[in-house]
Image (tube, rainbow over all chains, first blue to last red):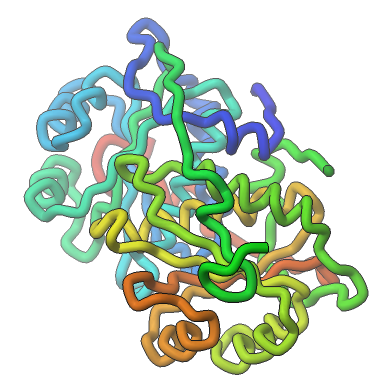
Length: 174
Length: 174
């Protein structure tokens, strides 16, 4: 396993949309990512999440067809589908699964894997995905994550910190 | 700065509700946490977030009074208030700020700081907080995070991975 400092992992992670088609994802690396997701904080420790690991080429191709931004799911060797469980926490079933997903992304990057996170907010995507993956009606599909070895090194910009942070009251500088 | 492996940081982070009252949070450590938040992924890179750093004792005491689970905000030397911006992304202004917040928590833990995340989902809490911190009507208050040096070492349990993960279809084991 490749280790990485947490601040470096956070700073150097990028969304990866091109994958090395000749390199599969080792099961032990995937397990480490899922283990990282499991340790995310959640409101009242309810852990209102579930993860489906999709490796089947047919299913990945179908997911790629369904998601308007997710063509590359057909080419990443793994797709993670993240579910939220309103019965475990009615208020946080949409908030807590993304926290776990971020842990997954960081653990993947620390191990040399690339990921791209795609939200699923429209029922026009969610319902056919539900059919494809046998997701029960009591669970919601929150997002999908493509996973594989990166075949690109994208740049990314961020707003400067000064525009994002206030002190004591909104809009007040340091 | 104390460095920490990302997988270790994820696994060993805990919600901290008791803080060392004699130890303040160094500004450079706080900046590193905010910088980590800034590098979180967001839908279409819209970064629909803003952060208010509250050190004022009076404001922390008022926040502690307002939040039903947040008494310890009066005793943590810093409270971070995380805002979402629906004008930057209407669909993801509630989802993306938590992703940035998780980066903040991990960066804090990697530097020896403790945090506790408290969601703000009720308007009965949000509106008086809005008044207290001068938050404009076009922004939403997503959560607060207490920050300080830990004065406790809580244990935490998680569901086993086997119950949380399916393969290819929901409910299917490996």
